[in-house]
Image 1 (cartoon, rainbow, N blue to C red):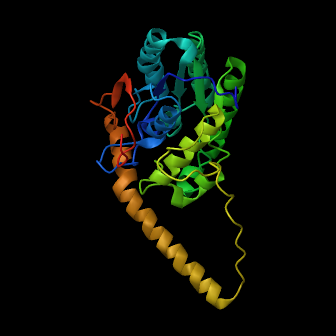
Image 2: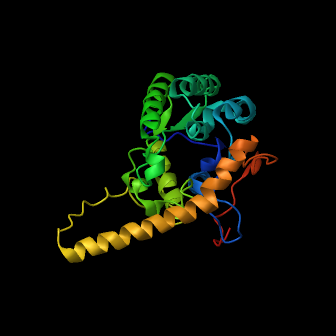
Image 3: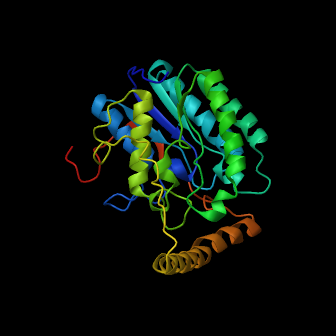
Length: 288
């Protein structure tokens, strides 16, 4: 469906922290994220568009399928499937666990995509990121790549639009991520919104920043001469990186492990930030 631009009158976003908009804070302190930014772009094109965001941080894919997909289907059927868009992204929290199996996740995701497409709405699917930015996350690269191949096949088979996050090379840089190394920063949420808009054929104006190419430039290859000064600089950089690793482990990784041991989730007790289809307000700091 890429390149098409049928009228979108309703947009329902489902998923986990990626879609909730973790670590992308607006001037009012509320989470924005790529989905809010995309909704703002849709509203520029069609001011009557309504938007709901059912995503909750920490959710596993089976929880998204069981809890959010039926709610999205109900909203779409009431709003009118022919002019509805549903985005679905999930599975990342599963892949962080040793038990996360790409084949099992693909079966769950396919069931969700089938249920959404059966309504007649347009469905937007996201692949996983290429986790090259940080050494520990890069250990999951094979599992994520296998899952992505499933997602591409599902999107093709079910007739879904696909946003290839793996191909956004700017997101492989540490500077694209927030300090917890699990969530994008504001600039990267904007880039994802712009990439999603391009896939949908929606103009990128109103995304909360200047339009970009979404993909980002490939990371440059830097050749370091083997001279004493360069070796010293490399040593200093290595030590600085290890200090950052230690700080991250203490502030983010250890609490995450503690929740896993307790069987807890960062989303426990939380509800969707935007549970109803409502008109889209102008971006924070912009007049209505």
